[in-house]
Image (cartoon, rainbow, N blue to C red; front, side):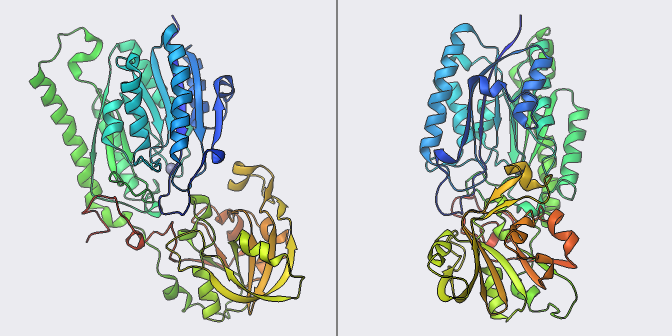
Length: 512
Ligand SMILES: [Zn+2]
């Protein structure tokens, strides 16, 4: 008979150093049949659906809640998700379920819960007693801050192996293949894990570079050597979610060898413990490897003052100043004043930066182009920014902020389609600095942002870009050089500058 798999998704990467909250209205919610309709898409959900179809399983869809990376999730979202999920799950339980499969992130934090995924997995077991004997599988993002609750409430959680995440869909399919093994061999894996006292910034956890490349390689070797190790996950962690579980960890789904197929008598407790001790040693080896390479994972950009004071103002072509700490694509507010302050303080000429500041755009509605006004600019979205920078500016132009993307295959296009709305937009000038003010956060991945305002960005000598990596497709072709700098912002790679409260100490690099 066809296996019946209960499906749900709950996905948010929570940045706890941002002001405000992520509410229900920011979540894209898919329910019931709509979820099945995502078959074929490039997401992990699509990967699960396609693989489940291949195995001939019947998918029992419930709900999927997902939102872009952002501030702490409101409690209401968690409770609404749970009520919607539980109601549907109970209905399906009456007709029988063979397994549960979830699509998760692993670094979600709500107003009351530091470990949302652990809570949801635990509730599944405690509030839906029918699940006690059922395999609970999930796919999740390698930026997860893995927890004990996640390990003890599930059977097999499978992380992505690539960062950037080119393998999210494929990882979901890998988890499906493991679930089918659970059925065919009639065995139930369990999760074990180990945490290492390291927190790495996102800039240090690309899988093409050490230390992640080495850790992933070792993880694959452990999987290959041990048939009873079903999966080894390298959890890079998400440093901007401040919780007691934040940091690097390793998790494994394992079965005891003699339990395979349940043909042999069960292991005695002590034999089972010996086997588990043996695989735990493998986790410890991964922890040791991470410790040995901890410095290489702490990729910190130099302070802006250090870089910017040494720049050659006569060098031909455009110089791009990249500011990962205010990376809009990573959830940052895009209103950090670090670059603007430096340009103004050092009297930069022919320089530009875009800043998201709906309040200031609104105030500028009173002006006609050519008029001047003193205004507080930016610095409102993050407590680590020194705050708004007050400047006398001249209004250059205003628009509705809509623009057609120049590159329809860009990262931005994958998020929004071919037209982007910056919201009401104004261009102002202060001395030698042009400031593009938007009303909606606009990741700087398409030059249409500037050209739609009648400005050709390649004619500037300096431009500040609030991104880490994904801006390069747009800016590399028009620039002569780029410098990465650290400014006070919520996505800073300098983790020591963030006001951590909940992370466990000692932890590298916060404690030397
Ligand atoms: Zn991620």
